[in-house]
Image (tube, rainbow, N blue to C red):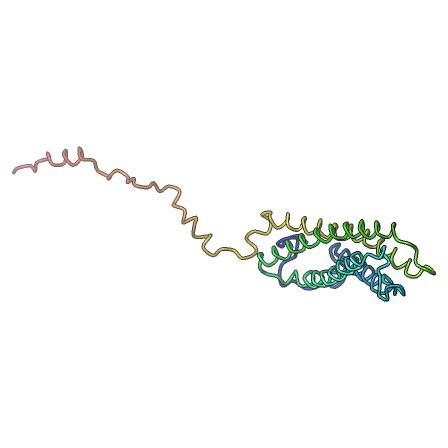
Length: 226
């Protein structure tokens, strides 16, 4: 949206729900939220099985509990982060402070880029452990485990897309289009001072209407005698 700081509209403008849900940032964030639910939901529901030999729960990813815990962690944190940034996106137009918008955009950029990296690590980690794992008896949890890996892969692109849009917003915010519209410095107008009259010259004065020679000539004039 043009006319506002960091790609947002003017603060206090009318809210349009249809326009809000059509924003690319909102669509990608909703996908991030959905994929996060799938990732940690699949691992939490059927990513573990009870082992009769050890009498404890073991992870289907090659009995590596770290793999299940890692996948659950990034999924839950991505779910929370998606909700936070969706709320922030909803309130973005109401942020009249440029600094507040800048902090939100930088937070979005940093978190999204970092979580895209964590999802990439998670995809590689889970896929590698699953390739070395034995197939559970009766195929228990296989579809869930594979779904978690698949949506970790998809989440890399959705979070990277969020980071890209946040970077574009940051670039818009550093331009001069929004300067002067928000938090204008009231003393800025006085720093330029006041312009002088076009014909005025500093330190200069015009010549007097009568020169010294003229006064001298008038002093030599003598009154006639009678």
